[in-house]
Figure 1 (cartoon, rainbow, N blue to C red):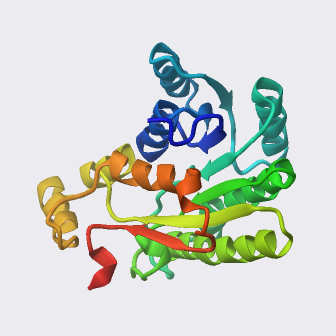
Figure 2 (figure 1 turned 180 degrees about the vertical axis):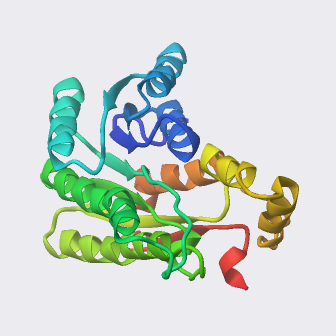
Length: 255
């Protein structure tokens, strides 16, 4: 307990899935939380749960693809808690489509949420943290490490997060900001996003079995598997880790 006591953390896309798990775990370990999402009712429920457990949290409705809303988020965070120590760039969307059948409109929509928002969050978090340091954690994916023939736009967005993270990490280190920037690369985790993907397939049972088979450990991951990685990177335990890829994928990319 208390691994991030005294820190203020923002978790985008914190209403459900990986974001919710990360927010709850950070709060349990002592952080003050700013939970953001477009899903206001679900986000408020996460905040209520944190408060009922004795933690501190606020909810901010945010479209991560809009720069002005990042500016508003930083203002709300500093007003509520006086500082920012951790940003978890978690918000993202899934999209299936090969290069031939992905429209430019779809491509740009995926990049705006999965990659542009990570750039904006990182940019504004650096401004808020550079006087005292902090940790920026960008959620990429196994699909930021390996290709998939039917995930052209998603691959590009998550691969972009991976290499952008390294650039930002080097910038912060060489500028003397004491801000660490790292990426996390989950395998398939049991979240609403993955559950919807399975449910929308022609044969849900076969699709789930196929996903499980991709992971040598023989099962899908759980949200807390990723939240523990977020907690490590948010804490001072990872003070010598920057520009790195934390792969939590049940062996998927080891093959």
